[in-house]
Length: 293
Ligand code: ADP
Ligand code: MG
Image 1: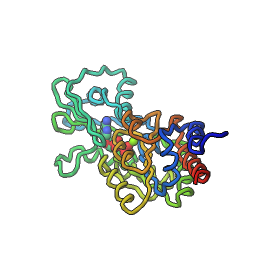
Image 2: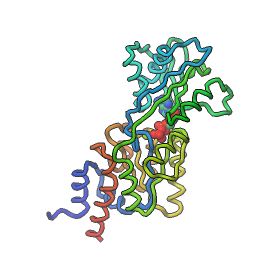
Image 3: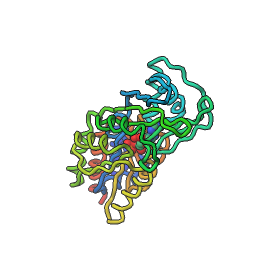
Image 4: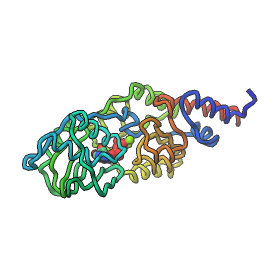
């Protein structure tokens, strides 16, 4: 065809299931030498399942009451963990109470008023936060490679949920292809706990794992590499990834499970839900650049 190389690269990327938002992206993708991957929803399928429902002694709650409370608070959230909690409650036929004053903190969790109580569902408390009643349950779940989510009622822990997610079938092959293309093994940036992160990393061949990161920590990692002259590609799906997607030389969002904010912020979107499309478009970009330069 007579199309300019970068425009035909955009068309080719589309054939691979990647929507590139500009010709500049197709140019930049070929320059990346460092890749940072998110875990939940990026290396994993992003449709996690609740595996454990553990009310704490003294909470006065049974399994169903705990799950119903958590699901009511999570209902307005688009986070994959929130969807897992709501789905589990629906599967048990539990009614969801209406909520007031919903707020969410990316990388941490949600908060809402349910039946007059302030309910928080989110990442386990830091040791500085005192209460140790829930700590054993969290440790046991994380030991098993689960993501542990804590439920607080009016500030006190009342239960812990265990959640697990499946790896994408093409995750390991994608990591291998990106390693070959850039000469560096991708790095895992995640808000999840170290054990769950390391388990996924080991399965896909990643050795550099940065767990427990807040959205701004993901940005800091990207900024540090770029200050040393690296050109970073970030691949993510969540609201928590949006700042890092924006800070990177190139940001790609996973389209199917991706949050609206990630899709808006990214330079390109994987619309066909295949992670392996990422190394494919890096290759395409390199070919197009050779034709242009
Ligand atoms: P990742 O970086 O792996 O995609 P996130 O940054 O989205 O993970 O979340 C980090 C952690 O914050 C989760 O492992 C969980 O403990 C907690 N969290 C975030 N959002 C929610 C939510 N809606 N419900 C419960 N926990 C949440
Ligand atoms: Mg994610």
